[in-house]
Amino acid sequence: MVQIKKIEHKGVLLAKLISGEWEQGLSFYSEPNDFIQAGSWRYAKGKELLPHVHNAVERKIDRTQEVLFVKKGRVRVKIFDLEDKPLAEHELRAGDIGIFLRGGHGYTVLEDDTQVLEVKNGPYPGPDADRRRL
Image (tube, rainbow, N blue to C red; front, side, top):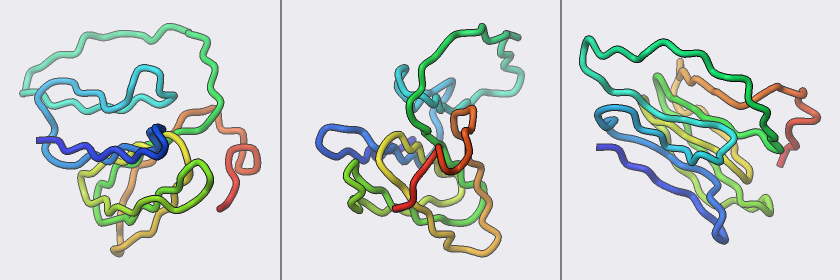
């Protein structure tokens, strides 16, 4: 069973941390208005997802959001509120997902050979335009 931990501050959702066995079928963890969309698939052998092409749709995006999937190892996530103050820490382990929507975040790798897939929306404007260090 999937466990979703929401990190909120003053009514604003900053992050979602997902662990556990994924549900059968297609499950999305992001809301339709999030800039990044993250979900999981869990199907039996032979399930066919029909071929498709995504249409060109103009979107307005004013922040970078990112998703981490920990393939192997462990990562400590530090989450900061909208005023850059530390708010929460959480450990992501192999198989866990972190969705970072607002506020700040930082990571500490806790095991050698930790492997993480990071996905974020683009296009990427470069480090100076995209972020500031806390």
